[in-house]
Image 1 (cartoon, rainbow over the protein chains, first blue to last red):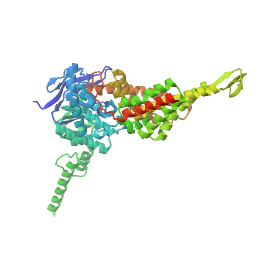
Image 2 (image 1 turned 120 degrees about the vertical axis):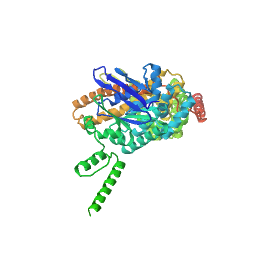
Image 3 (image 1 turned 60 degrees about the vertical axis):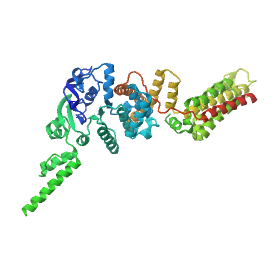
Image 4 (image 1 turned 45 degrees about the vertical axis):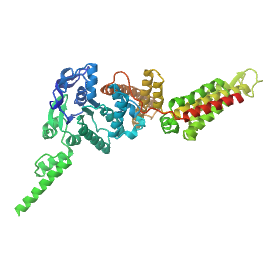
Length: 290
Length: 256
């Protein structure tokens, strides 16, 4: 099997009102990895996500899943959406039932599974996502973070190969953010999921994502590893992005204060390593001078 | 509405099967309306109070407060029955003279409005029994089982899910408007109310299209097929309660 699970080829999307959401987009998503889709507001991130599970049909170009062009027949779309699940930005758009269990069972019922299998899978996923205690409460009593978990569970329960996440951390408090990310990355590792997330959260990208795609005005500016992306300062600026805060600090220390680092540090742990290195070097130099 | 839902969820009678609860609420309701006798109405009213407060452990004051809500409508409605007019004043117990006519209350009218008032309150108490012990979600599932048309069930369940979202959105917009002094004058109040209504339509439309996309992503094929959370049990209490209630009502019917 090839290493790419989803790929697009010269994909363009024009809406009925004449606006172009995506133009000539050719990207590849690596299997089993976490890919970030970055870009300013209106860059086409959500549109790209929606082409991956066949909600948006390309005006020109193709989308391939497991090296086969997506077919837009109702039956094939159903099979595709079982394998490519999507978690929407606001759980309130996704949860349609006032009962947690009912909402989670929805996707499985659409797959036509037998009842006891559905119950087993639903119980299992509620335990994995830590929402078992919420299942007897109506949706409108729950907090945003809890609803987000249910939305994720409702998609995970279909046992997809790929999860599309639109702004997974937006609207969550810092604690909720950490919990959701830990949940997603643990489950991804455990189940061998491919995650694709559209996000603005650069710290999240630096810490959790392997690959990145940068979009600007519907075009691909960059595609590659996250490390490489953060090295292309000019491209980031054009896309309206920046380094992580830690990365900016490290860069400022390097350019303005004469620090010498070996690599560009983007996260706290990387920065600690670099700073320790730099300090030891300074001490060595000092003792050398004496 | 929000609170009613909360009371239903915390009621001790939630465990009863919704159909059992329908059997407690509806036969007395219909019987009471049909017989229209104060003694029966009082029995129903008291029984419902005992069931909701005694067995369901809902606070008595909550029940009383809720019962007084329809009282306003009832009073207005009963005024029409109570007050009669005539050119003579022989039959009236109390009367006033206006424009050459007598407006007043006759013993007959008093009796009649007392009957109607009690009867209406008894009927309302039956419905409150259902509302205070059965969350709408449970009731909807029963409607599915009772083969109520799917479209109606789906519409009801969507309305139930989104009414809270709608209230929340309306509150947010209202707060935003008030923070910009939308309530300064009568005129601006009317204007901001009309924008609020308009915005609600736009938001609802937007939400509906997003919801449709989200449903499609999970394989929606035109029907909201879901599974019941649990197969509901039918506790013995749920059979005993209507049995006791019916025999009580019937015995009062034949003795009085």
